[in-house]
Length: 314
Image 1: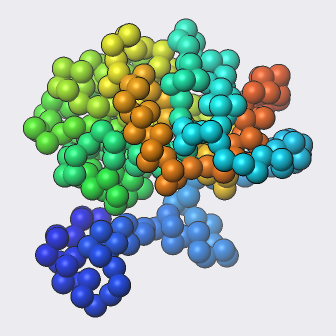
Image 2: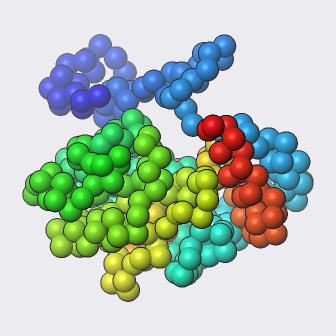
């Protein structure tokens, strides 16, 4: 949905309690949100994994018992140290092929949605253009525009994977960020390594930030996924990864996500602004227990996740 003009918002605000910012935010309550309010219908707008409850729920119950003592603040809004280490361990043991993610490069926040919002809020000025391959996940519109006040612009692509030529054709001086999703939502395409390298290379040349949404990294039929973190050079501080427990760990209701970045200044911004979208220490502790159980992930969770996804798909 197009952002209403400032004049239009100001006029409408006279008849409500909302500021122009509040009206802008309210305008992004879309189908994914409203569809959850109709319990007797099957929503095709919300991605939640209900295939794994028989394995998930007993494991979560065990983790929750141990986490129940986590009733204090985390030491910073970057997340509990154990949670930051847990997401790093999950990546290092089960997602990355050659790279290594250090816990000091991780921030834990309240969902992937919050992570995208925070990254754009921290790296882009109001009105900046965020490019993303079309078709794209509908809620990216809200994520980019409702609070960060950027403008999302779709880029023609091949099933969600843009070429350098397509990016160059879409580029304007206002373009300050490239938002990618791999595996892509809604196309499901896993970015080839060369395509990711091309996007990172193009963004570096144009001085554009890159945010890569990898929330479905483990939700693939086989070991076909390459994280952008495996492909970065030492000076690629303009690339930031978003992850979440919602998809691969089927914990969508827990609202726990993560940012991975080499840019310390971005983490400085999150250390302050993260106060507005922090995950609770209890949920961080539960997610950490799952992220660090390497044997359970390797021998039980990931094989079952992939086989059940494949069976459900076919």
